[in-house]
Length: 322
Image 1 (cartoon, rainbow, N blue to C red):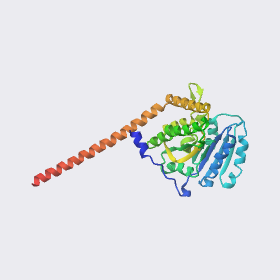
Image 2: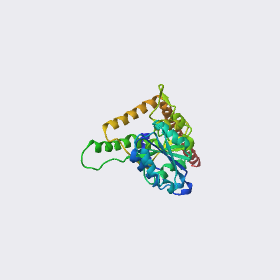
Image 3: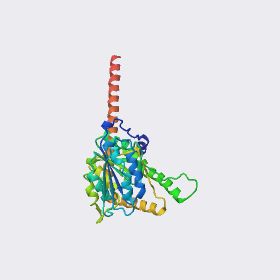
């Protein structure tokens, strides 16, 4: 019931309107075989309402084997003229998303590092919105954005290609956005989606090296970087929160095979971190929450007792006067 109440009471933090107060951003876009769609991601950064002189855009091509690199170079032609600082990194071979994130995050110069998937597009005001919790509260280490499926079709013709993204949009809300809004009040958002999340540089850069060396049962981890970063940041004592007004539109699978692979990856990640320490973190958080509630109840009982004591004294005084 406590978490339901948290979800009901959740409110996003308004964006800062004073450009001078806004922090510098490093927007990292890891890309692998996205071809022309990466253009949309890059352009959404360029057309955002965030001050361009405060944005560093880092695009990491993780050894794409199609024409992605050509599309990247075409898309960034106007970036330098906009005032955005640009860096293009290219891996000689595909090394995995963890290595791509490492390449971008470890060299980022902004005080806030934003991860944006190459199949995702941010709304015009999303950068302002996602940094506002980090500006307001120095104990917050990372912020998760709000995911909406972009390839939901309004076409009346029934087909699996149209139906599946629509269903996944509902799934993203029920297992992603809604739980995050409830957990946000506790500063305990346990997944920071790669589609769109913001990190305080000092909270995340100390952990990017471990993304490339993390193992589970003797094998290198190739998935779950969104949960691992949250796990490590929370373990360091930082809070992680969610911003419903920091909207990103992302592509969802349009066939069962890709959807199955996505859910399989999610399940592997859940089981991995179930054994890697999340129960300890969750127990610790639950204990702190129980102690906080108990403390409030004890304080309330003490206040009631003081009130009754004062009333008794007043009654005795009145009887004495009578």
